[in-house]
Length: 111
Length: 115
Image 1 (cartoon, one colour):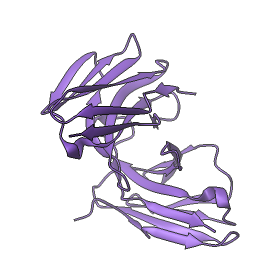
Image 2: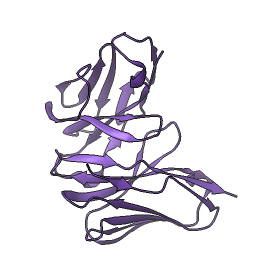
Image 3: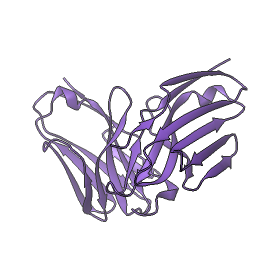
Image 4: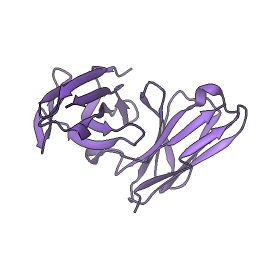
């Protein structure tokens, strides 16, 4: 299988910074996505990393290390609306070109 | 304009019934998918089609049969529904099979409840 591991839940304070980690199986790996999913809604695309390094997009940044099979999503200046589930997903070409999701990290932002 | 639309949004039905969920995308994407999200919120791929051709067929019971009449539509038919089929089913599409950098666009989901 393609084990994708991320913490189940995290809690952070409004205005703070939070880092959500994700580890994955490297065999056949060809890119990593982060998605945000609010309760009862569809997942929405946040970021895509295929090369090592940091991709910054406003308050959100995503980092990838292919050799370590590791990624993180960094959320700055947290807002209450950031309370959601954050899904790490990996694209595997040797398994029929499919996007495999982790179980998601529920982030709770408190005031 | 809805990019990926699924119908119905909610579906409550009895065990043993047969039901269909429809999905349409107006993004011009070549590839479409069905994902199942269970009560633990785990999103798991079921099927993918590229330009009407079945590409991925995960270990899904034969009671589930996808149909793609054209590349803009991917429907899911489920026979003999069971309690364990209760979940949220998401349709998604992507630009091209080998160039995923733009990500998948998901429909709003169909919440299926089997009673």
